[in-house]
Length: 211
Image 1: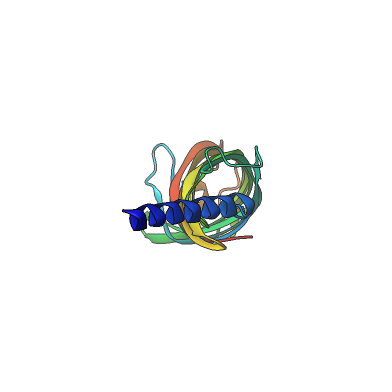
Image 2 (image 1 turned 45 degrees about the vertical axis):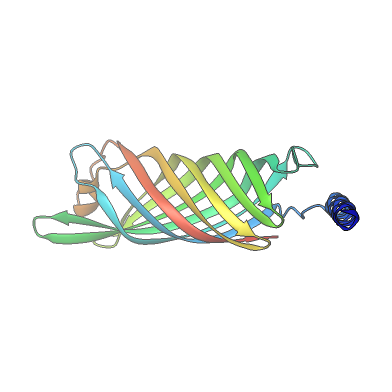
């Protein structure tokens, strides 16, 4: 009985020392992120078939500004994400009676929005976020050297899982902008064409580096 009591006291002392050590050496929060991803998306205008992305890629750099120094219940941190720049390229294909046409779409954006980070065990983090992403969008057709530039309203929401400096993530990207009708990219007509509302939907999977 005395041995059991002694072991219990020793176990309690070890747990207390471990807890104190955890408080003295909290998990290092890596606020900056660098993401490299694969992108898929679709562009849709009324009266036209969707432009389907054949392949795409993305590069994102930003930082999370945490709203409090210590995690709530040693588990949750709230923050504001600021993405300094987000570059996305997508190659689309448009089908018509005489064949197919390729379009190149490049977008540059900045993001801002809330995020929440959970730390279930030391150095393992699960992050969820939703961001507003004002975007500069460019669509280019090689067939007739036609291009369209403009502002696009985008939103990005997703989650990532990372251990120390490395992790993976998934996010949805969607929004609207106005571009020339898709048919305008396929003709040599120089007449002015009213721009149409163009809807983008898609997703990105990425690897993330946190530092």
